[in-house]
View (cartoon, rainbow, N blue to C red):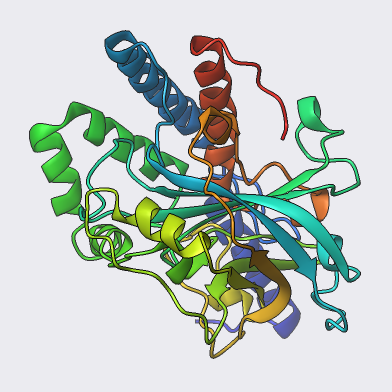
Length: 357
């Protein structure tokens, strides 16, 4: 076989590389500067998820006369808090809300993860939805661009159990079909998604003030990308005496009747992109590569926990956000559509005014 000249070999290599990339990325966008890559079928998959969850909320309303959240149904209560950005932060994290030290008022809703109100002893994820108040600057959502809030929505497990929008659509369809379809989905994803789902709902929590919470999905951090977490401050005492079906709410109320609580709010930057994917929130970003850095202190003073309608009327979404903290990845884009659609539907069915905050 006759050898090709070096310059022709180089040209052939470049052509083959271009062909491979064309095949890999056909029908999909190339990753943007934040590492996002939108799958060709994503918009259709998101529409499937939205319709399915809207149908579930409407069906529940038809049975009970009240429209509830499709997830995080049972609130353990809302509490008033302060969110104080720390001084002297490294430049890489001193961006957006964390650009300068400042104290903000905040409100937090603690909840279970299920779409049903169930015994607190049942295996379930737990949620901490934080709304920081008085945050200036234009926000992402067009109909709430002038809102003065920044939400950070977290659960008590570091990763999510669904990779992307098409997988979410399949999961939602299996869940709604129930029976063998539901069993089949979990069996078919036994060695990754199912194991994460079991871990996701398997943490034992006796007081919402004594759990660590994570974003699971990434967000922007100005010119960087981040995941975030809220961890109970070291050295605090926690009440865990109640053991009823509502033990989480009761233990939190008992503690805040006379004691305070606090959390360190931390961010983890994306330092090793090939090990820290944006489009797969089932992969944990390893702290050995990028430790969490405290950027703010959440202080919860003694108070009566709010379990009134005001707590339930509030809407929390990762997309109540400054552009500097825009949620990233396909699951975040699913949540944008679902949270907006379900919040709007819930308020309409309950004849409630939807306002922010």
